[in-house]
Image 1 (cartoon, rainbow, N blue to C red):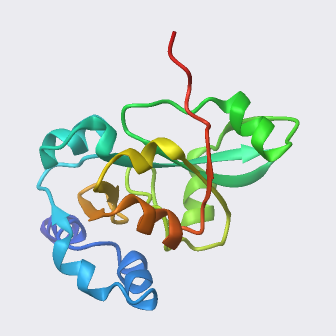
Image 2 (cartoon, rainbow, N blue to C red):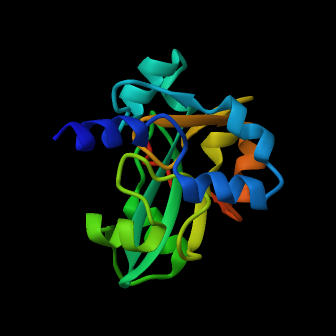
Length: 172
């Protein structure tokens, strides 16, 4: 039991190895020094914003949806919700739903709550809501529920190879 506890503790000291490798491949290795680690999980945008001390909208959520059964990644600010109907229209899909946890892990290589905006196991189509560009800096998951990294949103969108769209739920 002690071995498992030590292994679990080690798991959240660093970014996920796949994400760290993606940073290196993208020429962003210096960003590894800016990754922040937390002793408690930051699986939700609210938990992450509270731990970082930033606005909720400065969190970049990486959400996997299934468009006609095909995984698609949507990057959305932490204060907003994705309008699935707008995603459906953007993709020209008949049906869009939230992906099941197994599909998220299979597609990205990460568990829900730690999915980064890039560095995934498989290449998927990526949509980024324009609302992310309203900040100088946003924070994304670094592959674990314990780690986050900061990046200028335009740079994040470029490295995610995302298409800028308007898929945020409209408020009345």
